Image (tube, rainbow, N blue to C red; front, side, top):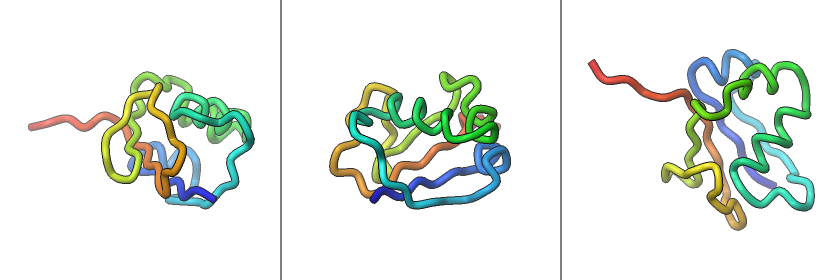
Amino acid sequence: MMKLVYFAWVRERIGKAEETVDLPAGTETVADLVGWLCGRGEEYAYAFENAGIVRAAIDRVHAKPDAAIAGATEIAFFPPMTGG
């Protein structure tokens, strides 16, 4: 089981702040996870329609799309932050 957490407009598009999921075999990277999520429904596809701008953190550490997710307990997704 893995906890997924969604922030800001990613959360709004998906319609939930978090969920716990069983990942299918072969889901090894952040990019694999995003691909699997997009197949779960329109709300996920909409949230990740431009996956290149959605950021991820594995156990609260920023991660790139090719980062391995094995052993992670939490993966968070959030839009890019802007300073001001």
